[in-house]
Image (cartoon, rainbow, N blue to C red; front, top):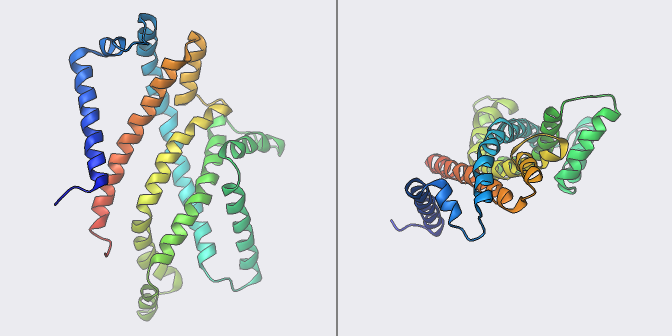
Length: 265
């Protein structure tokens, strides 16, 4: 079977990373960086010393922040999607539907940085004082919930109506049909776009630096500010982000291939 264009791109990317890793192993990290025309000995030392704290910041803050926010956001997204999918029959449901529409519209219509600032300064204004990390988790979770709700809603609606009728026919209630028949199929369909959303969220955790969380980007900022040499440090930070995102993309591709066996074509 011939490789698709997307598979060719992945193969080329993997080969490029393998060649880079081989070059680093053979030539040496410092020698390889020092061969670049704009890298002086001082910059080589700066970049070498900056890698470890940036990697630690990514592992201790960026990744946990993305994972926890995404999981909470998925719960919010599922609840929002259910409110929008279930036919409105009463005034309470209609009111809830209006609130959900307002929430999704407000989140989708404003920048994440503004949302983060509103949560960071808004909670203390109403007497709720939290550390920066849980504050950032709240902000990111609300953002993920709004965007992911559209993905989950579309996935639920993609399940044929006959699946609902089959559940009702064998005596299942609405919730039982949704939980046992509809939701598993919807989750399989929504995995690819939700995986892309998670990769995007990992990159957007750099905004947490604005609320004093020492994640990957803020660690790079501190190193650059101390050395007054910003370009090599930010290039290195970009490479660290890319390495993590590349690994997540490979994991996403593997997960999609496994799920393809269960999705009817």
